[in-house]
Every structure is written in structure tokens, then in C-alpha cells.
Length: 101
Image (cartoon, rainbow, N blue to C red; front, side, top):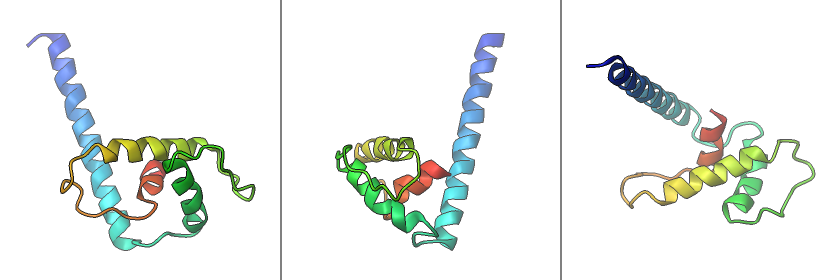
């Protein structure tokens, strides 16, 4: 195996490890805190607005940079492409929490 090929393999292994760790941390978080926590409850409606494609909506009481909601929208769009049955359970505000992790 050449140096370039070995580097690609190591890169893929590192990406797989990070993905696995992210999955473990996310599952542990959802197991321990299944409901919206602290200020998450205030961000749910804003996230739902963006995930619904309504980018002109904004709650002036929220000080979070809109990029978090745009990222949640992007994740929701990706998840929507996953065939039914692959994701066993969809949680409210899950996209926002996963983006925040």
C-alpha cells in the first residue's frame, strides 16, 4: 500500500471512529435527557419554522445566531432522504440538539 492509500485508510478509520463516538454520545444524551432541556424548549418553535422553510420568521427574544437553525434545517433535509424504517424514532428538536453536540 502506498503512503497516499495508507493515509486515506487512516482518514476513513478516523472518520468512522468520530462518527461512532458521536453516535454513542448522542444516544447517551437522549437516554438521560429525553425531553427538551433548559432553553431547548424556547428554540423548538424557531427550529420548526426553519425546518418548514420559513426563513423570514424570527423570534426577537432569541439571541442564538441563525446559523444553528440553518444547520438544523440541513440535517433535517438529509434525514428526510433516509428511507422509512432506518430511523426508528424521531425526537422533537433532535436536529437542533444533534447540531449543538
